[in-house]
Amino acid sequence: MSESPTNAHGAEIFTRRIFSWDELDSVRWDDQKLDAQLVTGEHMHLIRAVYEPGATYEMHSHPHEQFSLLLSGRIRLTVGEETREIGPGDGWYAPADVPHGGEILGEEEAVFIDIYSPATRWILGVFATGRLIAAGESAEAEPREP
Image (cartoon, rainbow, N blue to C red; front, side, top):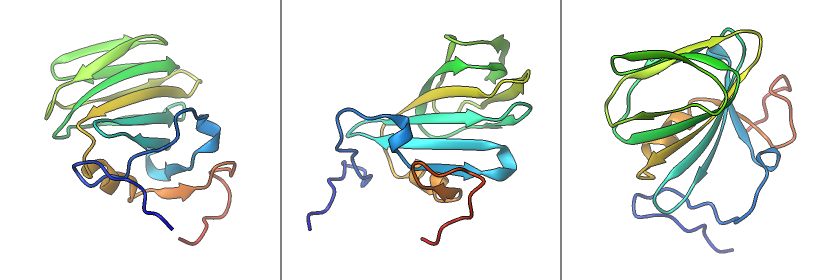
């Protein structure tokens, strides 16, 4: 059996070229009302985040830059000193170590895509703190054993 390739930072590289988010495992953080999926390349991470209505996208920062694009829902977003209400099609840029986060507004979930660069192992540690949900399973299903 061959090992999956890793990038220069030791993160496993996603080897599929075309995919559907429905085909990928996700991670659930019940306390944050958040489901997320991660794909790692040689130089970047791609994350799909889904927050429930009324959830809080907690203020945080990290050592790498991030671009994000809101696909659906509304967020009152803060990046650094700037705060705005954003909707589908709007995006944001969070430079390294700049605090960002917000509130999910309305009755619709907020779905956004994050791109982090470079693709290092730190985000894998974050994902390891959530509950793994196998592709095709519901977040309400009984947790499976690792």
